[in-house]
Length: 198
Image 1 (cartoon, one colour):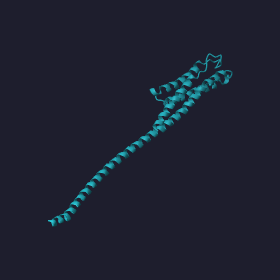
Image 2: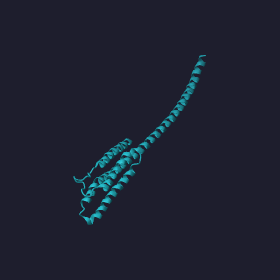
Image 3: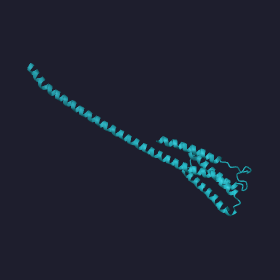
Image 4: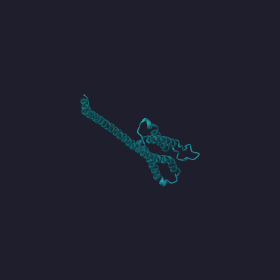
């Protein structure tokens, strides 16, 4: 019996050991294969998320750059509008102060009309930049009030006294100052919005 036991130990133990090694190898192979598959899925999802984030960042950067460019363009246009609107009453006053130049009156009047039309053209351009909604109501109104103020000067300006101290008509730049304040606040808010997108 001892011989049988030795035979069994010598022959069967290696067979059992081989079977167990094969089972462990197969199990390990299946586990590794499953882990690799899961890792590939995780990597794929991660790559898709990174791609989505990159696309969002690119989109945000494009919007931010466009908004900053828009702000700079409209700011220049607004500065031109404000400068020309602020100077207009003085050009107009000079026109009436120079009544002695009767031969050039028609040319001077045409110059004044051209200046007003140029300011009105700037008004229309500015209004095109600001859509007609509640968020832009204040700036649109301030732009329109300036041109109304200038038209009022043309309609009611006394021809004799100009803007001197004895005149009943006094120069008042409150509408222009108000537009400057409203525009400054508006552009600052837009700038902050553009920075948040970066």
